[in-house]
Amino acid sequence: MASTGPGNGVSRGLRVRLIGEGDESRAAIKALVEGLGEPAAEIEIDGAAAAPDRAGSPDVVMVLLAANDASAIQALREQTALNPRPAVFALLDSRSPALMKRAMRAGADELLFVPLDNGETTRALLKVSEARLRISRREGGVVCSFASVTGGVGVTSLAANLGIALRRSGKRVALFDLDLQTGALGVTLGLEPEATILPLVRLDRKLDSIQLESAMTKHPSGLYLLSAPKRIEEGETVSDVTVATVIGVMRQLFDFVLIDCGDHVDENSVAAWEHSDHIFYVLQQSITSARCAWRFIDLFERLGLSSIQPHFILNRYRPAHPITDKQIEATLERELYARVPADDRSVERAEVTAKNLWEVAPASPLVHALDDVARRIAPADPESAAAENGLFARLKSALATRA
Ligand SMILES: Nc1ncnc2c1ncn2[C@@H]1O[C@H](COP(=O)(O)OP(=O)(O)O)[C@@H](O)[C@H]1O
Ligand SMILES: [Mg+2]
Image (cartoon, rainbow, N blue to C red; front, side):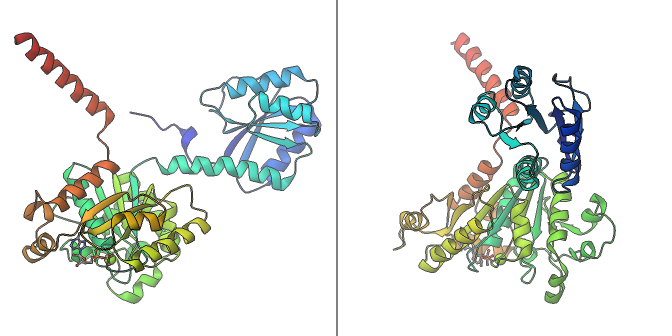
């Protein structure tokens, strides 16, 4: 298993190593970087030579570079060849194009000029800290948000059913009902949760796994639900900070965290999207649904979340519908991630018998489509797949020898 050493944590600030000569400028750079506050950074100073790894690998190496300084260029090259490779900033003492080219050709990721400019240095360091945050997001379980800006399209059903599909494949699954006013996830799952998110809102201490578990309700399939508060007005007390904290603890405990973001956008849903690995936007074959999806795409881009691309799922898909899936794709200028067929009969049977779709219609195209999406977000573990292949290969060759 991959170990996550302390070097991968996000709670600490950026670790910066400064390489180069000149006590005065080194002290000034250290003071400036450590005084920035955002992102928090601590700087350690080395001589001209690339120092061996001491307190774990740095996130950023800054190399002071003067014109005609061959040893500094060499130090820069050594840093860019390291594995894991830090972000490498060349700090130039002049704006000479020749020097800039040398630094770039030696592999520098950023060129900054001494004396350092506060704004430029902040920008360059933030790029590194944000990239590190994106990586850390992927540690622990996979977080998937389900959203729409039109109601009744199947956001809740998809979150619930994908939760069951993932659970059936042996994953530890948590569902988080962030459609706080509607709170329909429990009903859709046939649960009547006593516990809700409410005590977590009122916590004055750091949230831990025991408190989270006691706020969740177990479903017969084995998945866990963090339900919306019982009263509509209590939803108001849930803040984006609570949402982020809950997701952080959930992903430590579960392989998958599926969030029903409902059909309106607010600070809570944006917090959920920010912490998600996948965002599924649900739509149907209607003009309104496609138009609203566009409004969502526009908002999403303006929020600056474009490092995650939302996936579009066409729910209640009917191939014979006058608005075709191809037309929807043309309107969105994007491919659909999945088409989940309309199947009123199976959905109704599941509701009436209080069973899940796998129990009432295991061979239906609807169940196949749901299993298919689940497989895509939870691909088989490559190691076990390889082991399986190995077994099949051995079996085949054994049969071939006998034949
Ligand atoms: N693929 C489907 N086929 C048939 N009915 C569906 C399908 N998906 C959802 N439904 C039904 O559509 C209705 C609205 O779904 P819901 O998940 O509550 O939507 P939303 O959360 O977007 O408001 C529910 O009655 C649900 O059972
Ligand atoms: Mg809903």
